[in-house]
Image 1 (tube, one colour):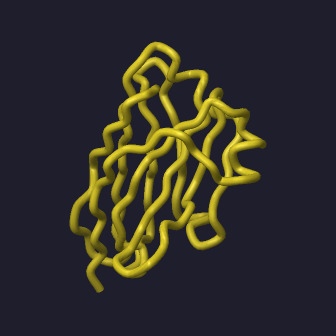
Image 2 (image 1 turned 180 degrees about the horizontal axis):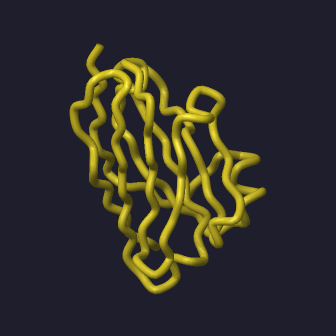
Length: 125
């Protein structure tokens, strides 16, 4: 079981940028499909982005496509979410997730087995 810890959240004005990081424990990080989800107050958890073990494949929610970029550094056991052109509706707790299933399988069901605690992102108008 991989342990995940997010950082990089904060308060930013609309139009600004933030980069979230998710550090993972363990020596098998490069075997995991990684993802980011978010949950706003009073709303259900929403998928944001996913990346394959190699970084060669990515998948985004329509609401963030063109503004957010997911990437990973397997040497540092870390996955990132670069968020640009932020909007007030991007305000949420952002969590990273991991799963050993292949990328295509994971994104088909958007099902991840391991989760971090989350980091708050607040975008002011």
